[in-house]
Length: 314
Image 1 (spheres, rainbow, N blue to C red):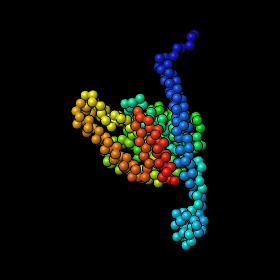
Image 2 (image 1 turned 30 degrees about the vertical axis):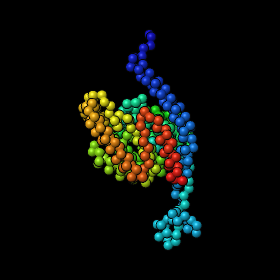
Image 3 (image 1 turned 135 degrees about the vertical axis):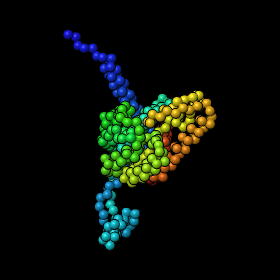
Image 4 (image 1 turned 90 degrees about the horizontal axis):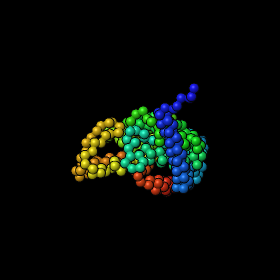
């Protein structure tokens, strides 16, 4: 009896699996090359040696840095003591990527999610090159996937694959819940890259205030870096007549007449105002902000960020 022939669905599944593997490998090659060519030395100069673990206290000696004085022990004993630290050689990098419905939007060759995955891949490859551990959190309005920090090429391949192709169960966004999760699972100080379009949904003011509070708290325990990803069409509408625009997360549909200049201007002004307010809020918490736009070369912004950060920390 001849073996059963595979169904068309099986063939489609196999073809998709082959395409996914091919694309993951392609992105791994690209991100590794970018990490080597563009990030060589920059990652280590900014992050390595900055993490410090508390070791012990000892009596203050003339010439010690007064900023290292442990005032609690000094007050308790009546003698000045300073804190001693040991350099943390191995860092933990946590990539937190927003995979909510709005991340799938893309008016250029790449969607915001693809841009997020590529940027995360470059950061992950840089970390692995420096023998650091990298973990991944994919989130919507819930934590969809958590991959604990680890090392190695196969680990990076998995992170890229999940960042690109993981299918979330929800479509909303809850940045506060995602940060809560990070604080629970990562006890030691880590470098946290929060990658999102930072569109928290209504009520905007209330959610922005809640995010501000959570970012402030999280940045005390970890080194948080916000990475904002946007699409050009989220900033400005084309003049193409009537459009029916659907909110990717809520499903709400709105009709817009883009032929009217005042409609396009109102859309642009509202989008820019929200983006400006969100950026100002993030920076007010002491969190560094990177801003990437799909369809543009985002690497200079990343290199410039590392250069400025290096100058700031001396």
